[in-house]
Image (cartoon, rainbow, N blue to C red; front, top):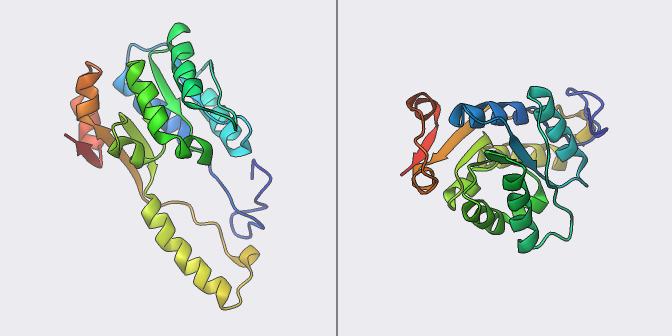
Length: 199
């Protein structure tokens, strides 16, 4: 659905990556930065799922995307993306989840810190390693559910006969150490909604 990978949720045909969380990530970041008028979106434009995520964020609010990342991304490209976002007047950044951005997590966190840019991520691992905020599925729970599917497939069930399971546990993780470094005070309403706060 959207990427062309899934015919329906009950009989997918192939796998799915849901972009619907981008709007919620934007909502949470703008709650953190209520005076912000520009939020940059950084992601891998060669991934169809990332394109859908960017569109979901665009639908949630008018956004400009000052920089993208390509397959040959190096540390300087991430630094450049955040610099361009800042030059374009962005007050915050959303990094769209993707294997490419995930494999360069340290460089992205470093670039966000260097640019002093409040950044929202899709994976808690970013926040565990110094990123500011993350909202998304608990991937360990997803992996545990995947083991059940593997077992069914090994016992003869066709993958196309298994329904798509949407994540049931979504987590908001906030790193207060990083917020202090950025000179930000996290609103108590946002802290109350957080599943975990790193101090």
